[in-house]
Length: 452
Picture (cartoon, rainbow, N blue to C red):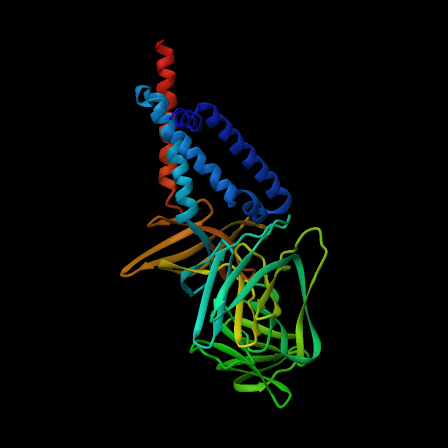
């Protein structure tokens, strides 16, 4: 009995409280240095979103809660309020971590969306064998300083399929290599409205959605919305769509509007639904080649790669998931091992919003007589059922609605599109209440000292 009393008093002691607060302060300071040297995602992976950091918070909450009863703090109102304030602040942090989320909405003028792209990156796998389908998803932050770990096993019929992370390339370059036993592969350069060209690799039978347009490579289209279909016939590549698309030849400056299909040619530009597509490299029989690039800092358009080893019934293959982690959709990869198909993706995901945002106009303001930008704002309409709220979002003037806060973040190069940041934080009220209770407790304590 004495042992439990001793353990109880030590767990809820003031000495442990001070020690835990020191550890928390040092951890957050270390996290700041890690973020400065290795980036935000590394700091999230190693410190702020790590399991040990969660345990530290839990110990603090238990310590402060038990201390209230151990020391009967209701007899000291000011000290009780200070303890309660920290509990409120910590509970707000827990709500933010497990119930809150944030992301971005990219809108073009005249466009409406009811979803956002998450800030947090995820690893997701879809495993299919005949009538069996397994879907797996996990929030996953990558550390450029090392220490990344992922290993999962899945039961497929009477066998086991394992997926293990074996390497991380902070900067990866994509290329195609010819292989006699290969399959059709392509490396396309794709440009969205107001953005720069980016490289996208396509394997035989793969598909990808960019904006409102789906792209299918040597695979039958499976959607009714706008799509681009590239396929092989008679040892040649063809491109087509269910909507008319434009073809531009930079050498002759000739433009053609095409309905149906035509031969895919390198050097020409194909435009549909706000996308412009050109061929970087394409092979009838080849494979993707992902290699590391040694650079001190990853550039804005550089991609990283997670490399996974997939094992099934004695056979091994590799998945190369390209992306950038935070706030980037990622490029999927697909492999087949025997009679099992595995699709993988590393990146942000779509999160449904309880309302939609429509961009009426994006306005850029400049200083008189100068091209220097002074401010920019988005004229939007928030639609929720029969409710319509017109609003102008600009710096330090967010749109607040049903617990969501929508900020102006960035814009497209052609000044016809806007990037909005969406934040949903149910821990905000408990956190602010905690600070108010903390100041009240300190004020009462100060008054008591003055009287004494």
